[in-house]
Amino acid sequence: MKHFFLISIGLYLLTSCGSSKKFSVAEIKSIYLEYNQVADLNFGKEFQATVFAVMIDGREVDVSKNKKFSFFSEDIKRLTNSTYLITKKPSSFDDEVANVRLTLTDKEETFSSNQSIKMNFKGVLNIFANGKDGEKGLGRKNRKGRLVLRDGKNGYNGGNGANGTNADKISCYVWSEGAYNYVYVKNISQNKVWKFKCLNSSPISINANGGNGGDGGKGGNGGDGQDGEVNKDGKKLRAGDGGDGGDAGNGGNGGNGGDVFVYLHPSAGHIASNITILNSGGQAGISGVAGVGGKGGVALPNGATRSNGRNGNNGSNGIEGMPGLPQQITTVEFDISKYR
Image (cartoon, rainbow, N blue to C red; front, side, top):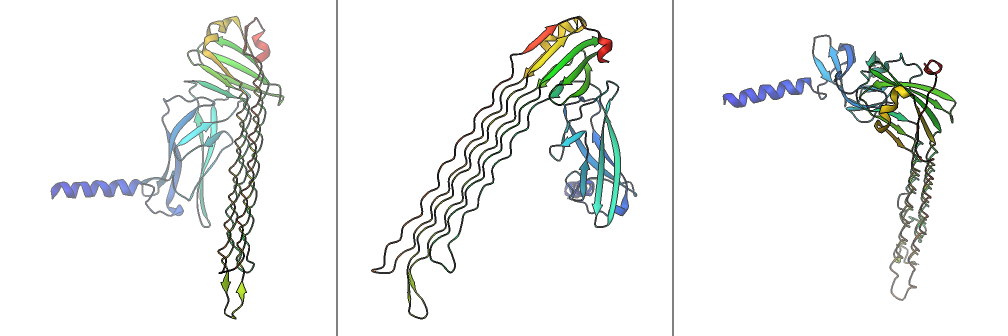
């Protein structure tokens, strides 16, 4: 009995600290993103975090899954309730933070807090210059039979998948100085400059893959025809034909991989094997599934047999994107001061 009592108390305490605990926004003192500050934190890295609201009475409530919580940031993308990706592309080597805004809203009450996540530059430095994936084509719902007319409705055609976009063309100038490797990125396609750094021991990954084509949408099934019947006035109503299935949507084309040129200063020549370049073409989108024709209705005795609807036509798969130029990593002397 004693053990049961202790377990019950423990469960109560866990529940009181969880996201299921009800609270009012007016009770909040602060909000913060809790994360492991000694884990790898660098631009392009994913990290795990939990959002807590601190109440005026001292309670801390996990609000990561709470519907009242909203996350805003131009520097970090929230992938799941607990997984975040640092997407910021700094324009200065002195930029070491990513900023977020945490908000809890309940009707007309709102509490917001700003927080900065400081980089420790450990782990892989991921540089993204890849294309965006095309969106999937709209899938269509199945049609139902008609209420007044006898024949089933034709299914709608599935939407075509969008094409993936091409990756960017970039040039990277890399050197080592002190405890860090510095990477000056000239994005030729966007006419932008990004400036990254990482610890000497950190690998560098450059992603310039083309975006994948979106898959085609499903065609809707055709509606079934109504069965033949005798209505309340004694009139014979014919059976209906089945509606045709909708055509499948086409898959989108993959985007082309980007051209990547890496120039290593002699001070960083030893890290050539630590650099990975990805610049494959995007995958082709897959055709959607064609809709199935509806069934013809059952005819009255001696009535005309009705036909089933035709199945929709299959769509076409997209075309895979072209890869970028073969990897270009060259050790060359250059004036570092031009790229600081």
